[in-house]
Length: 138
Image (cartoon, rainbow, N blue to C red; front, top):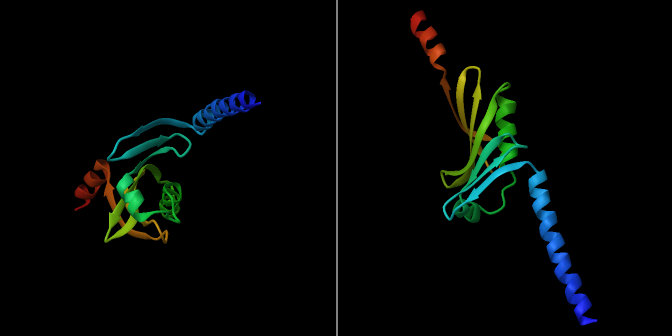
C-alpha cells in the first residue's frame, strides 16, 4: 500500500512539472533570464520587455499596478504609442514603472506610480526628421 502511494505521489510530481512547463510555454514567454541582480522577461503575449530588480520587488512588495497595466496607462494617454520596455524602478522612495514607448513622433519615457497608477513623470524625444523640420522653420 505504501509503495502504491509513493509511486502515485512521484507520478503526480512529474505530471505537475510537465504541466507547469507547458503552461509557461503556452503563455508565450519566448525568453526568460534571471540573475541575482535583475530578472528580464521578454513576454511575447505582452509584446514588450519587462525588467524587475528582485531587490526592488522584495522591498516594495505587492503592487496594485503591474507592468502590463502600467503599459496600458501610458498607451491610453498617448494613442498610437507602442510600448517596448517596462522596468520596475524607484522615484522619490516610491515604486514606479518606467515605461519606454515609441510613437510616430519619437520616443516616450513615462513613470507610472506602481500603487496609484498615475503618470508621475513623462519625457518625449522627437525623431531626427521632426527635429530637422523644426530647425528649418526657425
